Image (cartoon, rainbow, N blue to C red; front, side, top):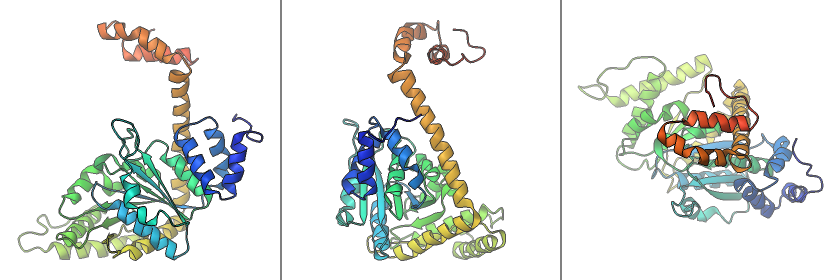
Length: 361
């Protein structure tokens, strides 16, 4: 049972938040990010207001131009008189734990637009490319009434897959001349991308990278390609074209989404309008097939598990006996007289939960 918010400071914040006060939005985000008292009650009250915003995740390796792409995409939406909330997750400072705010600086050209709200967050050690509270901050932007919520990840390469469970549409941004096609396969980005973007497409190698991605996407359909595509007289360009056509045909016949590969030059704005249209098409596809509902249900299920885990950690370590039991057990752990599993079992038992079978404490 969450605490009653009717006469609490949370209620005052809720009223100002729902009145569209940007200061209230900023305060709410700070409350959630710092896990201040009442933050869960605030999110609980705002939960019925969720589901209106289109959540877009931008992920990819460092240097791919994600921040510039985000700012240009936001401007594209503003031309349509649509409001945009942006969560830019920056690397944490190893000294202060705070964000280095590089993304915020790169998006400074849109920061004064009243229809755009930008929040930079520190990753704080989160390995999934997103800060732990990024999803809840995205909820606040959704509840506030933004039409689009763009989440730009920290850009750490292979560990950015978490964004797929956070966004309705996941955009994977790659750049030429960096081995990104191989990186995409290693990182599993082929599995999470709804849209591929080859940014900085005015550089040499952009066409080849796009063709390689198209071939890889085609291979996921289970159809073989020439073993030496691109060599010994076999044109990778023709293979890529065939892959694109067959992938599209498979999408039309089977009703699945044909993952597009779009070339952009974010610095000049080339390809941004096409990207926005493609994101729109993906939203229509998700709604028409029921996939949007399924994705959101999975997201809410994972959120509930995360909240339970967070509460249990709070009970065990901040308010419970966890730290005391652990400190007392360190000599036994070092000598081998006890194990982390035995100590963990005692901590869990102290919370009123049965000890796991087979572990004597």
